[in-house]
Length: 402
Image (tube, rainbow, N blue to C red):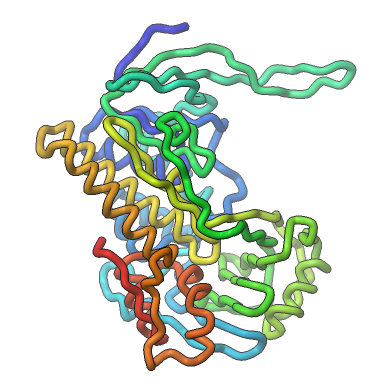
């Protein structure tokens, strides 16, 4: 075992939330280390849209200009049932610095954040897995992983522990995803709010000019959404009955298009990638205690249509980073971490409609009123922005401030 060393904040997980949290800390002059058990950022990522509020944060972190050059702006969302549109939301009414959504694959976002973090003097320690977490001033036991050949007569590559080190941190941030080891280590339970939903995801070329509009189909089969992307591509996500219904072929994609979105032209291919993914709406009972705190998917999960979990996680991670920096700089006491927990859980209970705070007003059409819950989960926004957008079609969203 190598010699112990110290840092002010250890971030576990180098997805978008962990990277943004670490970068915010580094920009505040806080000593930060970040580890991830994977060997690099993701190649095929399911989150692909940055909300208006996320764009403000990414601009403040100094990475938005690069992302904007690689992304596609969306400022409208239209709901469909079959061939008929049922209502449109417009981001231009939000005002602010970035009244739109930027379509960029999660892998592109991660790459930009990692590069900025490296420029700030912090390198992600890839292939490093948290093993144990102990003590009031947490000491993390971290395993360094490497690939070794095994098997006979056919060799195969497996991951093994090449070494173990210890890091003592003033604070630890768990941004390590829905199977969070940090959450497990501090004994926080997570509640499954709904049964899991399965989606069939396709990224392909299209002859249809979707312009600056994302389209959401809500029908008896569930939720389907198509996102315009750069260079004539789009991404479709179709809710399906289960993973065995996923057909990752041109024929499978066109069958779903005919059934769900007859206004969309059949594709001749190619399909650039496809996968079946499962999501269950979940919320942790707490966000931490003492010196160990959670942000992002380690604490919650939403459906994929509105890309709400990652974007809310970015807001949480930067908020948590600022609070930790204030404490370390003696500008605040640890009571502000309790405030972070209360406010974040309250916002998530509203977002998942756990307290039935979503109401249809007289302005809502019968279709909107009937599909209110699915609409809430499908809009790429959170907080006050989400409330403003939903009001355009007659839905009242009671969300806490922030």
